[in-house]
Length: 183
Image (cartoon, rainbow, N blue to C red; front, side, top):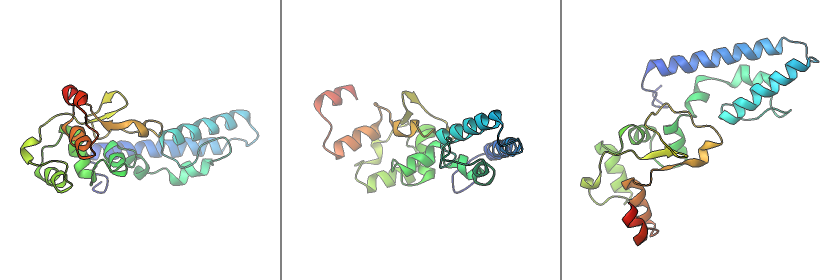
């Protein structure tokens, strides 16, 4: 729970129940006759869905196996798809706990502020305000338990009005006058 900054035991319990239910479903499908067209269709559907969610490394259509669901689908697989973990992997935050803070209420803790100052993204801690900072696609997300699918991983970004985005653009010399007015 600490590695992925899962705050509530309830989230862990839900991931554990989901993983157990999916393992049980995969076991029931595996017990069907291998030549049954229903088994082949359901096996492809479950593998493709778990691949698109990012919970398994390979998809259906002969690329993955039903035994992967039984052996590799764990609570950690769900936890690795949480928004703060994905943000850390995309280097939007240094630590998972910092990413949780950014997702929940914006930058408000001194630890995150010092990290951003150390990287030269902020000159003073007074510039930091409590706003929403992270969006996935067009949706602003404030729940750190949000699971990011494999397709949506490319669309995890800063909100346009975020001070973090503005300072990153300023740091990279990509902020122009038109965007200054919009921000």
